[in-house]
Amino acid sequence: MQEKNNIGSFDAILDDKYGKIGSPEREEFHKEAYAYCIGQIVCNARKQEKMTQSELAEKVGTNKTYISRIEKGVIEPGVGLFFRIIDALGLKFEIVKPVM
Image 1 (cartoon, helix red, strand yellow):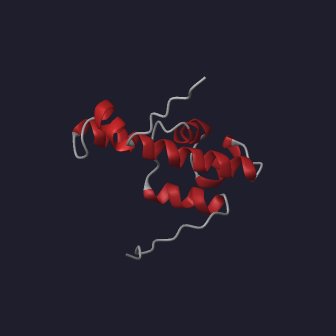
Image 2 (cartoon, helix red, strand yellow):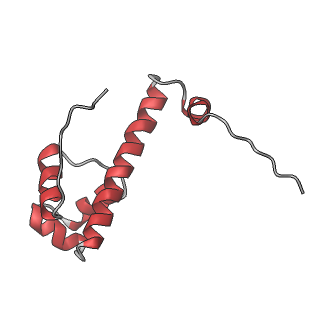
Image 3 (cartoon, helix red, strand yellow):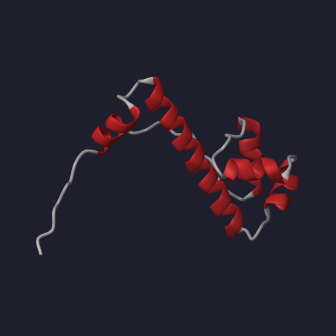
C-alpha cells in the first residue's frame, strides 16, 4: 500500500478557507483563534492550580459564566481583567521586543 504525501502550505489552506491575509474574513478568523488560545491557556492554568471557575471568578472580581466564556474563546477579557487572571493563576506576563 502506497501512502500519499499531500504536504502543502498552511497559509494556502487558510487563504482558501478564510481569504487572503488582511481580508476581513481572515482577520475575523485570526481574532477568534487568538481568543480560543487565550481561553485554553487560562483553562489549563486554572486546572493546574486545582481551582474552579467560580474560585477564579471570585479572586478576580467577576462571575463563573464570564470565566467560562473566556475559556471557551467566546470573549476576550479586557486588559485589566486579563492581568488579574494572570496574577490569580500565578502566571507571569512579559512584554518584550523581538530579536531580529
